[in-house]
Length: 110
Length: 114
Picture: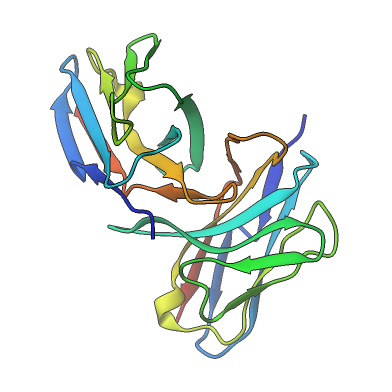
Protein backbone atom coordinates (compact mmCIF):
# COMPACT_ATOMS: atom_id res chain seq x y z
CA UNK A 1 0.00 0.00 0.00
CA UNK A 2 0.83 3.65 -0.02
CA UNK A 3 3.84 4.55 2.09
CA UNK A 4 5.20 7.90 3.09
CA UNK A 5 8.77 7.99 4.34
CA UNK A 6 9.90 10.81 6.57
CA UNK A 7 13.42 11.76 7.62
CA UNK A 8 15.14 12.36 9.89
CA UNK A 9 13.50 10.49 12.75
CA UNK A 10 15.10 12.79 15.32
CA UNK A 11 16.68 16.23 15.15
CA UNK A 12 18.25 18.18 17.97
CA UNK A 13 19.15 21.82 17.37
CA UNK A 14 20.29 24.84 19.28
CA UNK A 15 17.65 27.50 19.67
CA UNK A 16 17.92 29.87 16.75
CA UNK A 17 19.15 27.24 14.29
CA UNK A 18 17.08 26.16 11.34
CA UNK A 19 15.32 22.81 11.04
CA UNK A 20 14.06 20.81 8.07
CA UNK A 21 12.12 17.57 7.81
CA UNK A 22 11.55 15.72 4.56
CA UNK A 23 8.76 13.52 3.34
CA UNK A 24 8.99 11.18 0.34
CA UNK A 25 6.59 8.94 -1.50
CA UNK A 26 7.22 6.41 -4.26
CA UNK A 27 3.96 7.42 -5.90
CA UNK A 28 2.49 10.75 -6.90
CA UNK A 29 0.45 12.36 -4.16
CA UNK A 30 -2.69 14.34 -4.87
CA UNK A 31 -1.98 16.38 -1.75
CA UNK A 32 0.06 16.30 1.41
CA UNK A 33 -0.81 17.43 4.92
CA UNK A 34 1.43 18.39 7.81
CA UNK A 35 0.68 17.97 11.50
CA UNK A 36 2.45 18.97 14.69
CA UNK A 37 2.29 17.05 17.95
CA UNK A 38 3.58 18.75 21.07
CA UNK A 39 5.11 16.51 23.75
CA UNK A 40 2.29 14.74 25.57
CA UNK A 41 -0.24 16.18 23.14
CA UNK A 42 -2.15 15.14 20.07
CA UNK A 43 -1.49 15.83 16.38
CA UNK A 44 -2.76 19.17 15.19
CA UNK A 45 -3.23 20.03 11.54
CA UNK A 46 -0.86 22.68 10.21
CA UNK A 47 -1.39 22.88 6.47
CA UNK A 48 -2.28 21.12 3.25
CA UNK A 49 -0.42 21.41 -0.04
CA UNK A 50 -2.11 20.52 -3.29
CA UNK A 51 -0.31 22.03 -6.28
CA UNK A 52 2.92 20.93 -7.88
CA UNK A 53 5.78 23.12 -6.66
CA UNK A 54 3.57 24.84 -4.10
CA UNK A 55 5.22 26.83 -1.34
CA UNK A 56 3.31 28.08 1.67
CA UNK A 57 4.52 30.00 4.68
CA UNK A 58 3.25 30.31 8.20
CA UNK A 59 5.45 32.81 10.01
CA UNK A 60 8.79 30.97 10.42
CA UNK A 61 7.50 27.74 8.86
CA UNK A 62 7.88 27.12 5.13
CA UNK A 63 6.17 24.17 3.48
CA UNK A 64 7.05 22.94 0.01
CA UNK A 65 5.49 20.39 -2.31
CA UNK A 66 7.79 18.95 -4.96
CA UNK A 67 7.32 19.50 -8.65
CA UNK A 68 6.62 15.80 -9.17
CA UNK A 69 4.31 15.76 -6.13
CA UNK A 70 6.31 12.92 -4.62
CA UNK A 71 8.08 14.82 -1.89
CA UNK A 72 7.53 17.61 0.55
CA UNK A 73 9.46 19.48 3.18
CA UNK A 74 8.87 21.60 6.24
CA UNK A 75 11.52 24.16 7.11
CA UNK A 76 11.57 26.15 10.31
CA UNK A 77 13.74 29.25 10.38
CA UNK A 78 15.37 30.30 13.65
CA UNK A 79 13.79 27.70 15.89
CA UNK A 80 12.24 28.66 19.19
CA UNK A 81 11.47 26.47 22.19
CA UNK A 82 7.80 26.56 21.22
CA UNK A 83 8.69 24.60 18.08
CA UNK A 84 9.52 21.49 20.11
CA UNK A 85 7.45 18.48 19.13
CA UNK A 86 7.00 15.84 16.48
CA UNK A 87 6.14 16.84 12.93
CA UNK A 88 4.24 14.44 10.72
CA UNK A 89 3.51 14.50 7.05
CA UNK A 90 0.49 12.59 5.77
CA UNK A 91 -0.52 11.58 2.29
CA UNK A 92 -3.83 10.30 0.99
CA UNK A 93 -4.47 6.66 1.84
CA UNK A 94 -7.51 6.25 -0.34
CA UNK A 95 -11.11 7.22 0.37
CA UNK A 96 -10.47 10.00 2.88
CA UNK A 97 -7.90 8.04 4.85
CA UNK A 98 -4.42 9.35 5.59
CA UNK A 99 -1.08 7.57 5.62
CA UNK A 100 1.28 9.18 8.08
CA UNK A 101 5.03 9.35 7.91
CA UNK A 102 6.96 8.13 10.92
CA UNK A 103 7.40 11.68 12.14
CA UNK A 104 10.42 13.82 12.98
CA UNK A 105 10.91 14.57 16.62
CA UNK A 106 12.45 18.00 17.15
CA UNK A 107 14.18 18.88 20.39
CA UNK A 108 15.76 22.26 21.06
CA UNK A 109 18.56 23.29 23.34
CA UNK A 110 17.73 26.76 24.71
CA UNK B 1 -17.09 24.87 20.45
CA UNK B 2 -17.00 21.55 18.67
CA UNK B 3 -14.53 19.06 20.04
CA UNK B 4 -13.45 15.44 20.12
CA UNK B 5 -12.98 13.75 23.46
CA UNK B 6 -11.57 10.41 24.56
CA UNK B 7 -11.99 8.46 27.76
CA UNK B 8 -10.37 7.27 29.82
CA UNK B 9 -7.17 9.27 29.36
CA UNK B 10 -5.15 6.59 31.10
CA UNK B 11 -5.94 2.92 31.57
CA UNK B 12 -4.06 0.02 33.09
CA UNK B 13 -5.44 -3.43 32.49
CA UNK B 14 -4.38 -7.04 32.61
CA UNK B 15 -3.69 -9.45 29.79
CA UNK B 16 -6.84 -11.15 28.58
CA UNK B 17 -9.30 -8.54 29.77
CA UNK B 18 -11.72 -6.79 27.44
CA UNK B 19 -11.19 -3.04 27.26
CA UNK B 20 -13.25 -0.35 25.57
CA UNK B 21 -11.92 3.09 24.75
CA UNK B 22 -14.47 5.79 24.11
CA UNK B 23 -14.35 8.50 21.45
CA UNK B 24 -16.97 11.23 21.15
CA UNK B 25 -17.02 14.10 18.66
CA UNK B 26 -19.36 17.05 18.41
CA UNK B 27 -18.16 18.19 14.96
CA UNK B 28 -20.94 16.16 13.32
CA UNK B 29 -18.27 14.61 11.13
CA UNK B 30 -19.04 11.58 9.01
CA UNK B 31 -15.53 10.10 9.19
CA UNK B 32 -13.96 8.75 12.34
CA UNK B 33 -10.63 6.97 12.77
CA UNK B 34 -8.70 5.11 15.44
CA UNK B 35 -4.89 5.15 15.44
CA UNK B 36 -2.25 3.76 17.69
CA UNK B 37 1.04 5.55 18.19
CA UNK B 38 4.21 3.71 19.07
CA UNK B 39 7.81 4.89 19.00
CA UNK B 40 9.31 4.44 15.57
CA UNK B 41 5.97 3.66 13.91
CA UNK B 42 4.22 6.99 13.78
CA UNK B 43 0.43 6.78 13.62
CA UNK B 44 -1.02 3.50 12.41
CA UNK B 45 -4.65 3.12 11.45
CA UNK B 46 -6.62 0.52 13.37
CA UNK B 47 -10.24 0.98 12.23
CA UNK B 48 -12.27 3.67 10.57
CA UNK B 49 -15.85 4.57 9.78
CA UNK B 50 -17.46 6.73 7.11
CA UNK B 51 -20.83 6.92 8.78
CA UNK B 52 -23.39 5.24 11.00
CA UNK B 53 -23.25 1.45 10.80
CA UNK B 54 -20.15 1.61 8.58
CA UNK B 55 -16.84 0.19 9.89
CA UNK B 56 -13.64 -0.80 8.10
CA UNK B 57 -10.36 -2.44 9.06
CA UNK B 58 -7.14 -0.50 8.95
CA UNK B 59 -3.58 -1.76 8.71
CA UNK B 60 -3.35 -3.03 12.32
CA UNK B 61 -6.89 -4.20 13.09
CA UNK B 62 -6.18 -7.64 14.58
CA UNK B 63 -7.45 -7.85 18.15
CA UNK B 64 -9.57 -4.69 17.86
CA UNK B 65 -13.17 -3.99 16.94
CA UNK B 66 -15.36 -0.91 16.56
CA UNK B 67 -19.04 -0.16 16.13
CA UNK B 68 -20.77 3.00 14.94
CA UNK B 69 -24.33 3.31 16.19
CA UNK B 70 -24.52 7.11 15.90
CA UNK B 71 -22.60 9.96 14.30
CA UNK B 72 -20.89 11.12 17.49
CA UNK B 73 -19.30 7.94 18.87
CA UNK B 74 -16.83 5.30 17.73
CA UNK B 75 -15.79 3.11 20.66
CA UNK B 76 -12.74 0.90 20.22
CA UNK B 77 -12.79 -2.51 21.90
CA UNK B 78 -9.83 -4.71 22.61
CA UNK B 79 -11.39 -8.15 22.78
CA UNK B 80 -8.64 -9.76 24.87
CA UNK B 81 -5.91 -7.30 25.75
CA UNK B 82 -2.33 -8.29 25.01
CA UNK B 83 0.92 -6.66 26.12
CA UNK B 84 1.62 -5.79 22.48
CA UNK B 85 -1.40 -3.50 22.62
CA UNK B 86 0.25 -1.22 25.16
CA UNK B 87 0.26 2.05 23.28
CA UNK B 88 -1.21 5.52 22.99
CA UNK B 89 -4.52 5.50 21.14
CA UNK B 90 -5.85 8.49 19.22
CA UNK B 91 -9.28 8.98 17.81
CA UNK B 92 -9.76 11.43 14.95
CA UNK B 93 -12.57 12.72 12.81
CA UNK B 94 -12.93 14.54 9.51
CA UNK B 95 -15.70 16.15 7.54
CA UNK B 96 -15.88 13.79 4.60
CA UNK B 97 -17.81 16.12 2.33
CA UNK B 98 -14.85 17.48 0.36
CA UNK B 99 -11.92 15.97 -1.50
CA UNK B 100 -9.31 16.99 1.06
CA UNK B 101 -10.15 16.82 4.71
CA UNK B 102 -7.98 17.59 7.68
CA UNK B 103 -8.34 15.29 10.62
CA UNK B 104 -9.10 16.53 14.11
CA UNK B 105 -7.57 14.44 16.86
CA UNK B 106 -8.71 13.70 20.37
CA UNK B 107 -6.33 14.04 23.33
CA UNK B 108 -5.43 10.35 23.34
CA UNK B 109 -5.70 7.40 25.70
CA UNK B 110 -2.57 5.86 27.16
CA UNK B 111 -3.21 2.14 27.61
CA UNK B 112 -0.93 -0.17 29.54
CA UNK B 113 -1.52 -3.92 29.41
CA UNK B 114 0.26 -5.83 32.18
